[in-house]
Image (tube, rainbow, N blue to C red; front, top):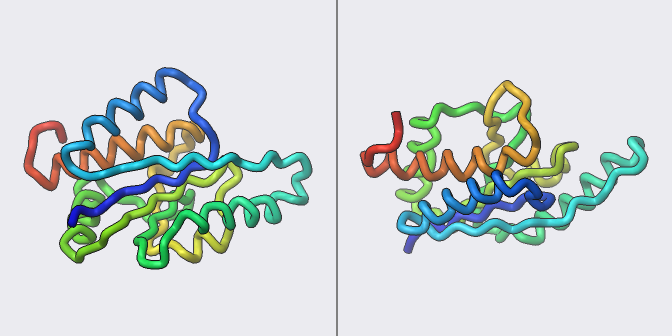
Length: 158
């Protein structure tokens, strides 16, 4: 049985160019793995003092979409950074170990709750650089696609 990939992300992608890029990589991934994106509505933070409470509420919504047996990778600023080859190797190991569902979590621009972070098997950072929050989804699906190309020794990765 193939490993399914689920990306849980807070917020909708508004920019057409980002949507188009994400859709393109989702389409390219179709022959390699089933992949879905679950978009959750972020809670607006009107009072900075309530940030942690709101992150916890968002965390409950996120955790409701994660099965007990799922392998979870959260996207976090202080997470581990992988090269594309290391990331590919990590995915290949999960596939070979019989992981049935891999879940990536992209929190809101304020981060993710401790409960979700604690549920993670791996905390991953894309870069030391700061990107627009909505870029994270495009960067992630591109790297997942690249990982499968590397695994299969197919041209794409340079």
